[in-house]
Figure (tube, rainbow, N blue to C red):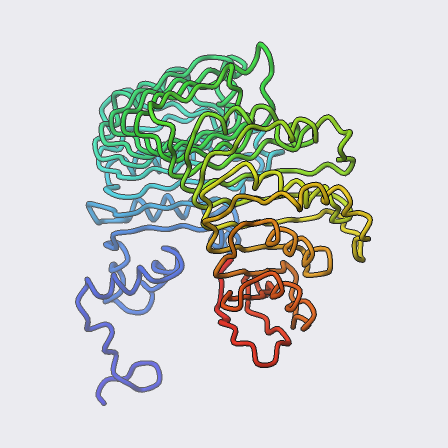
Length: 510
C-alpha cells in the first residue's frame, strides 16, 4: 500500500474521473456538504463547482442561521457548470428584517440562465410571518430550458411577459397573490408544452376577478384556495385530470364558480362544494375513470350527502373508481333533515371500485350501518368495496341489540352487489360493533366475495375465534378472510384463532 491516506491506505477515490466524483457528491444530503469536501485536498477543491444539481435544504439553515442566504449567493456565484439538471432551495423561515423578494430574485435570474430541468424554491413560512411578507413583489423571469418549476413563496408574484417557457411541462405556484393577467398569458401563450398546472393562493381585486385559461397541451389542472373564489374558465382539449378545493362554501355574490371545457376529462377530484348552478363541467361523455368527492366542513355539518354532491353524482352514469367522503353528525336520526335529504339521493354512478370514507361522532350506532346500506343499494356492478369508518370520541362498549332496530327494515332487502369480488373494511378497532356491521353488510349482499379483509387503525395482536366465526358464518368456505392491525404506519397481518383454517395472510400497505 503506497501513499498515506487517513488510516494509512491509498486514496483511490481521488484518482477517479471527475464525473464519478461528481456522482458521489450528488448523493450527499445537500450542496453545502459537497462544498465542504473542497478542504480534503487540492484535487477536490473545485469538483463540487461542476456538479449538475444544487440543493439547499432546511437543515443548512438550522446549522448556519441567517448566513444560509449569503451561502447560497456564494455557491451560485462560484458554480461553473453551464447547465443544471436541478436547483432546489428550501427555506425554513424568514427572519425579521429579511426581504424575501430581494433575496430570491437573483436565484431566479441564475436559474433562468442555467436550469434545464427542475427548479424548486419553497418556504415553510408561518402564517404570522406571511402577513408581513406578502406585500413584497417578486418577478419570475422566463426560464426557457426549465422542464418543471415549483414556487411556494409567501409573496406577490409577477410572471415575465418577455420570452417563452419553451420546455416547461410542470408549473406549480403557491403564493399570496398573482398579478392580474399573468396566469392567463403564461399558460395560454408562453407555455406551449405545459402538461400540469397547480395553483394555490389568491388573486387581486378581492378575489372576484375572472381567470380564463386556454391550453392545447394541458393534461392536469389543480387549483385551490382563494383563487377558486373568482370565476375560473378553462378550455383544455387534452385535460384528463381536474382537482379543485375551496376553503369555504359558495357565497352568493362573491364566489362565481368554474367552467371547465375538457372533452377528454377522465378524473375529477372535488374537495369542496360543487354548485351545479355556477360550476359546469363540459364533457360530452358521462363516464369517468375516477371521481372523488368530499364536501367541505361547513357542508358536512349540515348534511350527510349535500345536494351539491348529489348533483355531481347525477352528472355521470359510470365511474371506474368512486370515492366518497361523508360525515355522520352526532344528532343524525330518521327525523333529522340531513338524513331525509340523504335518503332522497339519486342513484350513484355504476362503479367497479367503491371507496366510502365515513366519519361519525360518539358510538358506532345503527344510523352508520343504515347509511352504508342505503348507499350500497344505489350502485351496481361494484367488484371491490372499501369502507373506512372513523368515530370521533368513540364510546367504549358494544351496541345494544335494540340499537339495530332501524336496520331491520333494510336487512330483508338485498343490496344488489352481485359482482362483488373483494370487500375491505377499516375501523378504529375490531369490537362487536364493527364485526356486526361487516356481518350485516355481507348478509345484505346478493354475492359472496372471494376475499374479505377487516383492518384496525389501532394495533392489535390477535383476533378471537368467535370474531372469525361470526364473519366465516356468512361467507362461503373458499372465501379468504384476513385481519390487519396498523403498526408503524402500515397494516400488518394479524392471526385469527382458527385451528385448521387455511388463511392466506398477506401484507397490505396503507
